[in-house]
Image (cartoon, rainbow, N blue to C red):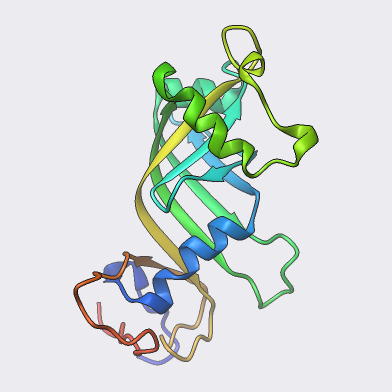
Length: 188
């Protein structure tokens, strides 16, 4: 029915053009919004500098006694949003991620720190002394279970009136697919 928002979450879509937003925005931006909740379900959101390790793992450092770190210890399910805060009204792009977060295991800490340091300017790179037990920070990781992209209201490809999220998956390398093939999301 015209004028009603399309439920874009009811479908998962693959394909190069839709999925391409995920690695592009992960590479383009340096900060994410991390949504956590404590053991009683009280929500908390915080900005965090991050490094993506592929499209299914996010790394960051935080103090273990910060509110979001304490929340992760109590409830590891997190929500993540990556977007450009300087985008003009009507020009926003965003990815939304559902993930499970935890401290990086000790034996993987050096490799995770190396990934983080690739995103930091030379004068701001971290060393082992910045991390526990010698330093105040802990390396965390989020294993991403689901990826969504923002579909702006009025997008002619989807006939949606308001902004919506669209679940996307990486294209199957064995399936030929046109990156510009329109995807029909009518119906519920």
